[in-house]
Structure formats: structure tokens, C-alpha cells
View 1 (cartoon, rainbow, N blue to C red):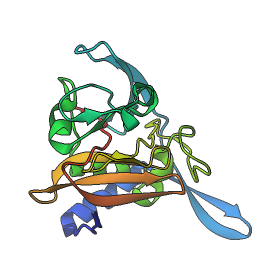
View 2: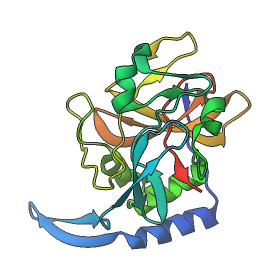
View 3: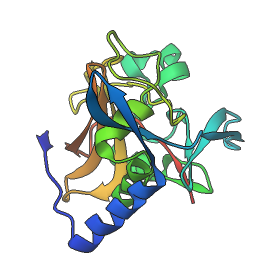
View 4: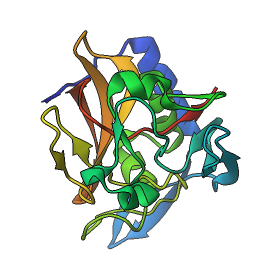
Length: 217
């Protein structure tokens, strides 16, 4: 697995910076030091019942996007419960290889592209701030650092399944597939960790099993 830094065009960066204007900036005084506190509008919630198996999911509107507020738990193709235990699916959902993740979301929803994920993080005041706003306040190993879940996204650490079939990281980190390929053998992901609120960008082999969050068409 290899971490990469994306090179964005000037126009894209300018658009991203403009989107931060949606985040309210409040000047505060703390320990005699001027800092900036970023706040976001409160999330809007709804529910969606997957007609394929009857499972009900909480959904959340963040900015102008509707997302599942739970990891997908639909059995299809190459998908697995962590440690092959159905009880893990109740909270953390299933793990999917990339090809299966591309078709796993129900009709009217889809696997998000990298561009759509950037829109999400920009609506949460930028990637440096978004991680803590995305992390659920339970379901993570201690210390679950910086988690506030103020976005309502409720990110949970489903771990991963590697190409040898070994499961790793439940409770410690979550990896979510993006629909954007890195190359013919790997695709882009986003990841969050129990030890802090920072967000990672990792290219992972498509045969790995990772979590899926669906975004509305």
C-alpha cells in the first residue's frame, strides 16, 4: 500500500477554497492566543430501506450531498463480514473488493468518486478539519482521538481484508473505497484512524476488502 499526494489544478484548488466560505469562522480567544473556530450547519437525517434485502439505513445530508450514515451491509459478490462473523456486520457493515464495491450500492445510490469525496470534505471546512467531524463517537478503540461526529456521517472502523484473506484493524481504522482508479490494479481510498482526527489517502489493491459508503445519485 502506498500513500500518494494528489496534484490538483489551480482551478480546482480555487474552487475548493471558495467552498470553505460555507464554513462559518468565529474568532475566539483561548489562552491569550487568537485562533479560528470552524462551525458547520447541523446535519439533516432521513432513512432509506434497501429494497433488495429490507435493511434500513440512516442517511445524512452534508452540504448538498446525501450519504449513507452507516457502512453498507449488503451481501453481494466478493464481500465479507470481518472475521466472517455476521455480528460484526451489524455495526461495521461488510467489506468489499473494489469491483464488487462498484456495483454494491442500491439503485439511486452509487460508490462516491474522489471528486465527490473532496466536495464532502470541503463542506466540512477542508480535509484538515473534516476527519474529526466524520468519526463516530463510539465503535472505535480508545482513545478515538478528536472524534466529534458533528457532520452526522458516523464513520466507523471496519478494518480490512487483505489479499490472503486475513482480517486486520477492526476498531482501529476504517478504509472506504472510492470509484476513482489509481491504476489498473489499485483504486483510491480514504481512511480514518482511532489515534487521531487526520484523514489518509491511500491507493490499495482492488482485491482488498474495504468498507463502502453510498452517496445519492
